Length: 219
Image (cartoon, rainbow, N blue to C red):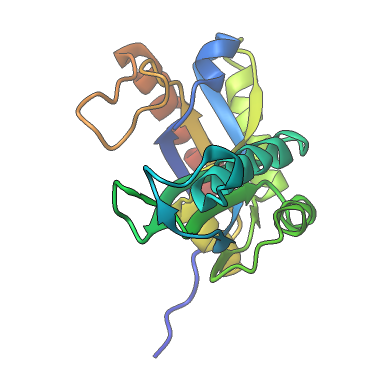
């Protein structure tokens, strides 16, 4: 038997980035969870001996792949809020003394909404093997978090989350969801011993989240 969905979901998480610290704000209200598209781009070249093939006549797949990585970077920079990462290369034949003949480039592309995701994927010429749709968070719950922050005389920073979170999963399932970020003092490092937020910021985040939950339950 399927259980009834919750009426709302609020999540608190350290910001996995530096934006709150740069803005001098302890807390941030998350507007959306980015969409993700992952896939491979393949670059072809021609294998040759590393010592006997003149530089002028080489068809080096890895050199082409390096140029492709820069184009991927520039494509993401051209779309506000988008990011793209090449975190893995597979080089063939993979020997130190052989010019690469083929490189498979693994791309992770992200953007805050469906339109920007589509534009980025089209610009990259990517055929994703994995997709996660962007999740827009509930405006009324965002407003509630903003009110609680403002009532304490604090600046309100709104930002999209570049990482996936439970709030995105719940929102995709039809549950009104919202997120509160707490400032990272370690450049956004998280899920690591180096993760760090101040005790004051954490206490403030818990206070705001608790007040928002009380407000929800009293409605």
